[in-house]
Length: 391
Image (cartoon, rainbow, N blue to C red):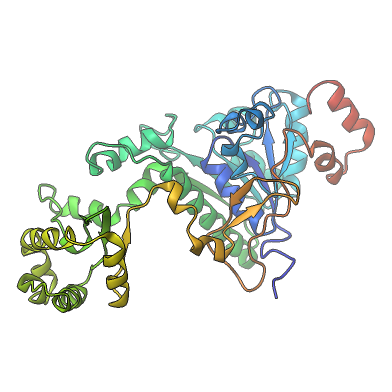
């Protein structure tokens, strides 16, 4: 039986965010039941609202780039350049557990929302600042996006000079920050104290390449050897990615192919990692000549039978239709009447797991509700709307 209460119900997150990394971080909390209030400037909202393939949604500030990380959140549109706007947000922070932001280093301090200021009004606040390079060092004040971090981290160089066609550093940064915030909240439950978190996209990118980063520091001139068992191979009608990683899997692959009439001594003789690396070129050439002889589906069935990981290289259009995802219920509709089905969390829980029960909000959709919840009366709220401080 699935719990109707998310695991993070009762946690209140103020998300002053834009584009992808921090909104995705906040989304992890909203999926698990936390109250996540997305704060945007009325005249300069999150630009992700206007990005995506459906023009009508972009026009309405509900572009798919925004929607994939906006479910279950509340929207407060407030001008933080005004005294009244800043005072209002400070009142909101008083009852919050988390303050999450991803503006360039120093911007929040200039607006009056640095950690030192916020912990005065809320000593237990967990404050997470997500930036390109962290809060200190020669690049700390430099702006960044996923693609520039991929360049600066060596990811593009590691990818043969090509930028991978997805913003995975942003998403990994969101997960990393969500983990740090969760750890800080657990720590707060024991100590009663909040803390400041500085999250760096550059360091996230390097963490995604930890083995390569460590190896380059020890042997900077040594290139990473090819491993034939985890390489792609052309088949009679496509390409299959082989996943024979461990020495024992090389030997199992040898048995598998031998059953089909292909005897490859360089495979069956693999005992230790050094055998993998020293014989990889020979093994690759042998396997290349074998896999080209039959269609992908036949190889897939055979490798599955022998429990050797392998998958055909699919297009994204093909991958998203995988029955595995449908069976797991990975896609969720934002409402009963919506045709938009969004990716949800990549995990399931027996209790308190992720759900989407509220569509991504339009800009300022929940402003009045959020302000009433912190004790502001109707006259105060009406005045903020009248003066265009809140929308």
